[in-house]
Structures are given as C-alpha cells and as structure tokens.
Length: 339
Image (cartoon, rainbow, N blue to C red; front, top):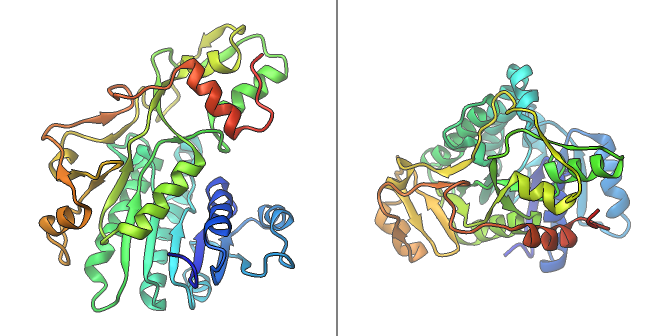
C-alpha cells in the first residue's frame, strides 16, 4: 500500500509519528520517502538518533509549522499520502491559550487541506480524539471543527483523485501526557499517594500500535469522508492506579476544568449515520456529493448500528481489569514493574 509512495507526517516527531515510522519501515520496506514535518528541532534531533539519515536515506526531516501555509505546500510537493497528527493536545494548555490552539488545530487543518489539494496528494488521514465528540473544552471543539473540515474537503476536490478521512480514538496507553507514566513517575519518586481526579472516572484505552493500525486500515479502505472509530476497551482510573502501585492510597482531587467524567466517541445522534464495519465503526458524512450512504455500506460490507446507539467509556461492553492493564503496560512501557 505504501511501497513506492511518498508519505508526509505532520507532527511526525510525536509518539504517534515515531510508531508510524517504525511500522512503515517494518511493513513497507520499499516506501519511497517518509517526510517528518514538525516544528521542534530538538525532537527531530532525537528522532535522527533513532533513524540516522545515513542508514535511513528515505526519511527526510523538515522544520515547519502547519500554521505556515507556504512552507507546508513546499513540503507537500510530490507527496502521495498525508497523515495529519500535528495538534495542540493538552486540555489545560488550550483553555489558557485559546487563540494559539485555534491557529494550530483549525487554521492548520485548513492549510493541510489546501496543500493536499494543490500538490496532487492522493490520500489524507487526519487524527482526531474522543474529546471531539460532544466537546466541552476548547481542544475538543477545535478538533471537531478540524474533523468537519477534513470530511467536507471531499466535496471541494473537483476532479482531483484524492480522499480525505478522519480517525478518532481514545487515550493512548503510555504516550506522552498519559496518566500512566505520570503515576509511574510519582510512585518511583516516593510519593505517599496517587492523585485521582474522580474515583468514578473512566476512559477508552488504545495502544500506539493499535492507533497506527487504524490509520493504516483507513488508508487502505476509505472512500473518503468517513470518520473511523475503533472498538476498544475502557478502563477505570482506579484500576490504572491499582495496576501500577497497589500499595499506595488514592486521593481524590476533583475533575479539572474542561474534563469529562467519561469520554464519548459516538453519541445517540451520531448513531443515525454510524455504520458497523466489524472491527471498527464509521460515522458517515452528513453532506456527501461523491458517495451515497448505500455506496459506503456496500464498499465496507457494513450495516447501520441501531438508532440510539451510544458508545462511551462508561457503557462499553469490553473492560480492562487490573491484571489485563498490567499485561499491557509490560508490553508497551520498557522496564514496567509493579511496586
């Protein structure tokens, strides 16, 4: 699928970008070029230590910001596939710096779309978040806007052979900003207790590799306009704490501004346009000029979910336990032990 292709990853030095590059090199050894597009030279330097240019000449590192439309168009020259992972992701950072969040998450999405349309790109997959579903914080609202922009871009492509789609998923296990390394750090530094925002809190749980696999699947199967959602387990925040430090007491500190008690990925209203693909769900575009609902169903060999279907982290049918969380942590976090 990616052999012989030029792939550009915005925000390519992040946790997702690193795992995506690792997967491409493993599964598509004849990829023509991988372009890492990001604004942090230190993160690019660190990534170059893992993938030095002399050993991986197919990887190129470009300093650039998705806010910079002209630089982005230069970077997209000759690109076949764009994976858009760049974003301001921290909820509290977005609340305190709303204009900066909008510039990156919304204006940046417009720039990616324009660059893709101008440069002959064939496939674009944008990464979203469960916080974009019924958003209550600015980060979620900007990502919902971004999602809508990418989905609607299929209606303005004209005669161009290009497809835009979105993937939405929950908390990535062990990634930067995840509560898991935070709890491990507190435990290893001798904390006497673990701070829990709310003992009832639940979240969706996905590994970096599962997130990459979803993007790869979307690239290989999308018609354009779908918002793909994986079927993944939920966890209770108290079980995460127990899995990491069973001997430490927990102290409830209260939900932070802009934070939900439970996350959602499909609302009852979304169910009216949601189809079940087996391993994944897909929310179909509300306005689509290129494909009918029937063509999406036939292409994906799918069926509609029941009206009123609701997919949230607290009503999930699949749950991680303390034991299963420990097994997963051991696979994705180097040197993980229970203390």
